Image 1 (cartoon, rainbow, N blue to C red):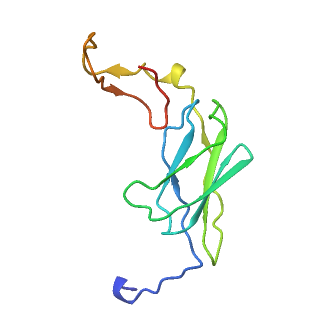
Image 2 (cartoon, rainbow, N blue to C red; image 1 turned 45 degrees about the vertical axis):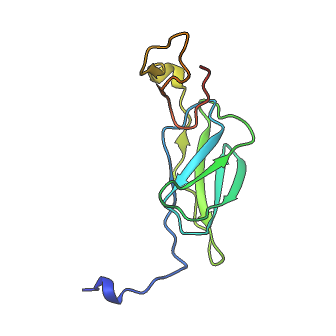
Length: 130
């Protein structure tokens, strides 16, 4: 049986990264986690590829800005590359229509005329107007 203390790291083997879900229409960015430090992360949105240096993946991963907002039905995939190898893309994540499958934003406090701040719950990457 192989023990963790005698395992050798193989830099040619990379696991696929993880795309933060859900992905909702109108989002302007995609967040990717669980990649090798300093890998280049590519996000493929229905054939349009955007890439960015990943830096260190923990604790928040990398948030990659997109050229255009996501549209419901688009497929998003990601992969990581380093100096040695390129990993195949992840399974496709389908962009959802947040107006059809989720409740509206929830306001935690009652808004009043003199309020300086309002706290709401929204999807990650969503744009909001208060």
